[in-house]
Image (cartoon, rainbow, N blue to C red; front, side, top):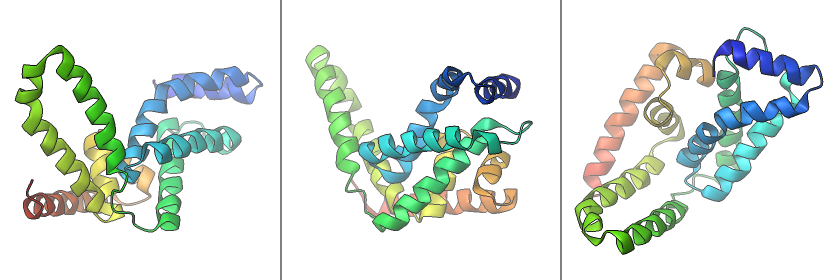
Length: 191
């Protein structure tokens, strides 16, 4: 969605067309859910925090500055909710990785019924993805956030800086340190 489209929809909502907000939710729902899931490791938390993100954005839409990107503002709301949630919860070590593995196992078992050879071919890849998810949850929150925004959400360094309220150079350093730490964790936690 272009910034002009976002601003048109926001203007419609602010002028009383509440149903227009659904277009913004549809456009960013998946990205926000994925961000929250990658940061928390929990489908339940991802559902709750994604919903809260859109609720708060809607409630505070009058404070949105036209000319800015809505998705940047929305990501900022989501990241603040995630940070507060993680502080309240303490740093949970991917207990929720079981959510990820259960979901993946459901997909895998369905695929196995249709194509057993495919499971054999993809088994090692699946283990590596699971291992990466677990190691990702072991990163400090600021590094995890930077890595997720860069590689899972595909944001530029400038966009990450905007949503993280950090300089571009600080973001680049966090991404670099996150990758290095992730490599270290992946090596230490051999499958």
